[in-house]
Amino acid sequence: MATLTDYDTTVFLQSAIKIWLTAFNFRINSGNPEFKYANADILTIDGGYNNIETYYSATKIVDPYSGTVNKFIQNMAKNIFGSVETVSFLLNTNTLQTSIQNSLVSAAENVNDSIDANGSIYAAVTGTSSTGYKTVKNIYDSISTTDRLKLHYNIVKGTTLPASSTINNLVDSVNNANIIIKTDSNSDIIELIVNTSGSKYGKGDSVTFTDGTYSLNSLSITSYQAAGFNGTLETSDIEFPLYVGDIINITQTLNSSINEVDASGDAISVSLIVRFSIKLVKNKNTK
Image (cartoon, rainbow, N blue to C red; front, side, top):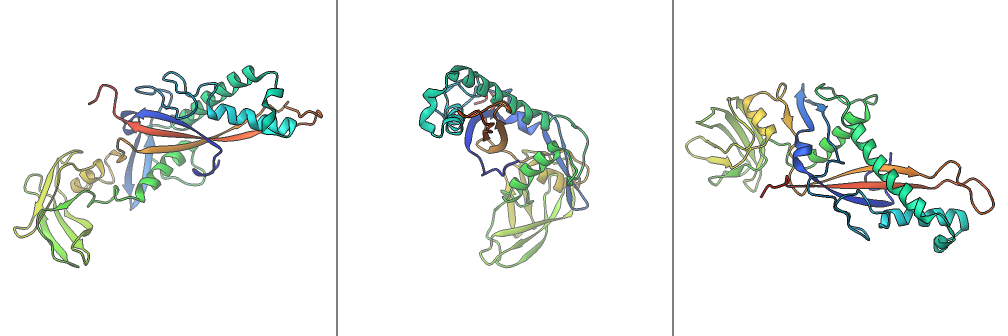
């Protein structure tokens, strides 16, 4: 499969974030992530499709006159007649448009099939893992390049902290976790270590840690942070820290019929690498 940036055209979709939050979970086993996944159905679009192409459709993945379809037809004409300007030479354009549109739907179904087969079974990803596990890991790896999978994510200073320091015994008096933080030369938090775990932390909780001199807080912790503060990173079903506005890119390849020939009767092959760019949006009827 192509890399996420190696594609010929893009189909833009919007998908309710709830579909993705309920699809994927991970946990940390001996420092390494393990994953399980259920069904993330990109054909179940909450609020309609969002194709930023020649035409817009709220009911189809892609319209037959869209840029994605037209590009495939242009490439077909080029391979048959030698130029993208020869589309008019094709006598079955309408049939091709419908066929390509159906192929795009099938490609989306292939995405679904790859991530809805082995739900509820945790496993580390290896070279022999299924496409589903590899897809989930790719999403996880993309998130891990951000701060979202750090325990100090969105933890803000309630008081000025000393620079280049380690501060011990910061305690949350509500759920009783005891943490250690480290700061850089700008007094920013660069690491958070759970010294003693607490209990009953949950995604979305607000927390405050203090040692009586210094304090820090978060208005809404992630599922990962909750598991970290509870000391259950190895056993909790941790949600991926996804947010409205995130974009998930998945590529599929469309190929021409094996019976396609050029003007001389020689066999030709046309392929199109399509990126499904899936933007996560608010759940329907959510304000």
